[in-house]
Length: 254
Ligand SMILES: [Zn+2]
Ligand SMILES: [Zn+2]
Image 1 (cartoon, rainbow, N blue to C red):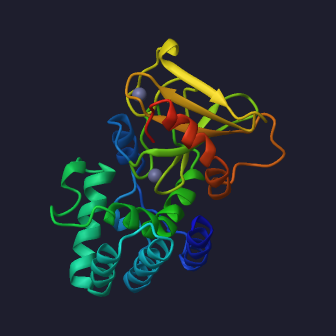
Image 2: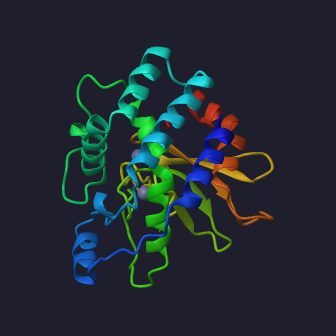
């Protein structure tokens, strides 16, 4: 399923232009000083007919692999056909979850929306949003970002990579943007008491888990210190499914 998703996202991403982001440096500085992300919904190079197709195809792939129930799948595909429903819904969802202009993540979706809609939106928006993160990562003026949420789109990290210098870079679960973050601080609750961070690795030392004993959440990482290749999120998140099982067995949640 992951491979089918990645394959589709790659195809979409290749036809999305790299956006020319008109961002005012002063505004960027103010946003970052306030801990707010900088990609506004209007900045995303979103072509609606392409997005609607990607959205429906994402739902189809999840459904085919039993990750989306038939009833929810039918509802989501119907939404994806109707631009009048989908466009305001996606805009509201992004504004509420990115926090670029404040916004409350609890207001992200209508109360009667299927629970799996969040996941479909994250995956369907990724190829478009990833182009923004790519464009912004090339800008040298960005100062360090000490927060656990994504500096570009405000979402949570979903994976991490340990660099050869033993720094840790978090990888956003929505736009795949990366940012350096303290290796032994929990990105979810900011706990930085090393005694309350549990870390364990796979036997070959290639992957590692950092679990927080305060909020009970965990994050996986690819250990680039002994690795022959760079991190490949799609491959590495599948290769580490046994680590998820091990973390959950110890009472942590993703
Ligand atoms: Zn992001
Ligand atoms: Zn925590």
